Each structure stands twice: as structure tokens, then as C-alpha cells.
Image (cartoon, rainbow, N blue to C red):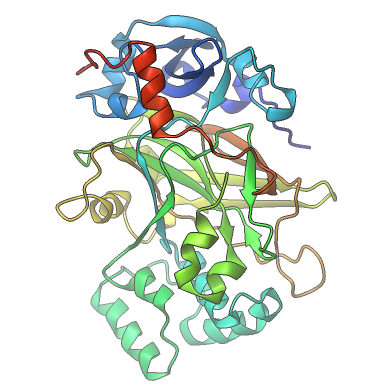
Length: 398
């Protein structure tokens, strides 16, 4: 069974030796985080050059600046990964964090046809999992099951919209799925994300929920996409299904956003075109012996990643510290976990592994949000700590 303990070989991309990989590590001696790079299995503290990950992503050429940055070795990645899970942690030694800090954490929703239909079904079922199968058949009879070739905002999409309105079957999810405007929402607050090896939160009020395995892009304040990482946009289907106005309650909860294991920067070996071709693998293993596997293929996304970035940041939306943008998922599990017709939902203790060869493997254990470690280290704490360490003087302009 999957565990929170990973070796560097399991966590890293298959071409790690050629990848520009950065992250964040908690340093007990400094009582604060450090921005690090990975070199041949060693973790190098480069926070004297880049005090924050936001600073790094604002560099003119982040990958080149990271390769040139001098720093101090703080240990092997294997040792730091081994010390990362809460239950096995020695608090006197470094452990891995989510690889972002000051950036806004945004997400694009309903970017795949399959997941769009599932959102419509949630809405019709008003969050009741037991009614989903009946509404699934009803929706599929109207629009079919393959809308992947339909370009959002196109004449064909608008013709379908007109037909569904006439039949009284239009939905707010179809609006953002095939209409001109993408759904862009706030997934989590800056510095609230958890990383690989951490417990991940499910609100205990939810009885119908699922992971959402995604690629998340790191975007600078200048709207430049500088890298990518894996993410879990944990979703409470019953909460959002009751009302889309409950999206914040369905999405933004303690430990409900996971990112990692590291941020891979774009360079000559890795570009946005590689992201466009990625297949994201998901494995869920429960303490009850349940196992579910799934896949999300970025090649089937209905809106190009650059279009989503353009809708998230620009003349009307500025993010001076940059942003992280989840790209959405086609994974929407309908397999029954318990009684027939009940569909899939998490149980506490589920191990969730999200992986793709060029980004590595992100692993988390699902627990109740109020039993996960509370988020206590925010922007004020970070700024005080960096100032105490003398890292805010002459912040790099690499």
C-alpha cells in the first residue's frame, strides 16, 4: 500500500538529473523556511539569493538564475523526505514544505468535458450522491458523453447552449464549460498549501467528495508561466452541489490544497508544450482495502493553459507576488465504494498518490480538516523571520 514515506527516486521526475527543480524546506535552526534547489540528490539552500519562491519566479530567467545561484547544502533529499510526514518527524531536522509561498493560489474549474458533465449532475442532484446516477442518464441523453471537440465560446457551443436553454436544461456549469469565460476561483490562501508527505483535509460535514489530480502552473506577476507542479484540488461534491455559492466552503478549508513535490522550472528541456501532453495518474488506496485508479490527460483540456492564464491575470486582475493556477481535471469518479448507486467518496486514512513522469509524485493522506495541523505560519511570520535572518536586504534581481 502507498505510504507517506517516499524516496527521492519515487518523488522526483524520471529525468531529474536534467530538470531544474526548486522547493521549500523548513529549517528548525532558522525557525523558518528556505528556498532550495535540488542538485544530484542534494538540497541546496539558496534563500540568500531568493528569500521567497515569489522572488525566484519573478527573476528574468528563473531556471538560469537557479542554476547560477550559490548556496549551502542542508542535507540529502532522501533524508528530508523521510523526515517530512508528521508522525515520523524529528522537529530538530529539516522537512519539505509546499513549493510556493506568497503567490495567490487560483484554480480553473470545468476545463474538461467529462468533469463538466459531473458538475451539472451534482447541481441537478443537489449534492445527493444517491440521486446522481438518475441525473447522469438524463443529462447524457440530452448532450451525449463526448463534448471534448467543442471549443468554448464557438458558434457550435453557442448553438448547443440555445438548444439546452430551450429544453430547460441549461446550467451554470455548462456556461463556464462551453461559454467564452472560464471559471477562475480562489483555491487557497498564500502559504496555506500542504506539500507531499502531509495530511490533506476533508471537511467532516462532507459525505461525497473526491481528489482532483491536476497540474498547477507557477505564473509571475508579469503573466509569464515559469514552471509547473502537481496539485490536489480537494473537492466536496455534496457541498458545491447544494449551491455554487458554497464553492468557498467546498474548496478552501484547512489543508485542503496540496502542491508538490517540487516546482519544475521551464528551461530548454521542459516547456509548456510538455505540460500540454501530460497524463496525470491517480491512485487512491483505503485502509478498508479499496483501490481506485484514474487518469487525467491534459491533451483533452477544453481551454489551452495559456488561455486560462490569460483569463486569470491581465489588465483586470493583477497579482504582484505572482500566482499558482490549477488547470482542472477530467477525473470525476463514479465507481461505487459502498452500496450500489452511492458513487465514490473518501474515507479518512485514504492514501492519494498523484504522479506524472516529468513532475514526479505527490502523496498525501486524507484526514478531517480539524484533525490536520492548523495553518499558523502566514505572511507576517515569514516577513519577520526573513528580516531576523537578514534576508530582506538587497533582495536579488537575478
